[in-house]
Image (cartoon, rainbow, N blue to C red; front, top):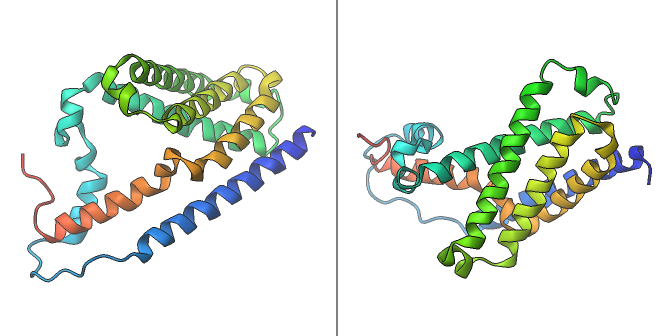
Length: 211
């Protein structure tokens, strides 16, 4: 398969992943929720805005306050993921091989993919070396990390050389096909869960929190 065919393959895999994830979300929502009975004590909208804003800060989460290094690694990991998908979009559009290295954004993108790769590998090592995490981990935890971290690393290398173009496209297809099957599906369900959290506790007057 040539690079043009691989680019088409990435687009098809992305469409399949999007459809599968949306169907899972529709199915999850079809179970319904219990209708609220008590009178609202606050604003659902304010709760949603808090959940997606200040509620994600380290000061609002006990777990992140207790593990600031892990929080920082996670932030770097996700920044690398977003950057890698930007590079992938660039590659799928068929940008000339020499265009990426000459872009003014190249140094920043290289740095972000490097940070993301380091973050992913660090979190993987932590999972392997921590007895409690290792005991509760399943194969999906390792597969999701390896596929995602490899994708970030390949995107970073693509910024430096066109020789890894095919490897990046293949890695992207594998990641997209796996996305609806394992924990990576939280790329969609994260937003659904935060929305429900903010709406529920905003209505109850619990969100926003007062520190």
